[in-house]
Length: 149
Image 1 (tube, rainbow, N blue to C red):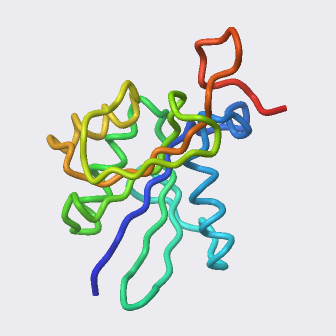
Image 2 (cartoon, rainbow, N blue to C red):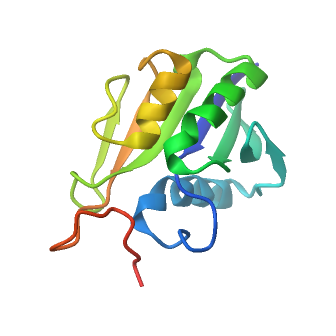
């Protein structure tokens, strides 16, 4: 059976939970809710949930490392699940896209995102698909980690 790993990027801890920078975590949380699965397992430096869909095993993962070290978890997932790098889908925030806009890419550079940069460095390739989720930028701030509250 083919396996797809969907990795949402974010920072662990309650202090980051409601920040736009954690939109990757929130996307995989929402997907898990829609599929009726829970993040009950910890492995590969990530909280994980899994389900089967159309003959494909889908593993959802939220790295327990901080964003800038996401590559450690991504590398562990690729090796543990024995999947090709192209079966790793990374979901992350993009402050250069307007809030809610999505951009899907089959490969490419980090685009200024340190979590994606860490994954590229750890895997030794940029040949993995990713979904960039627009979070915009707050007026007068260069930080992507502002709270929604």
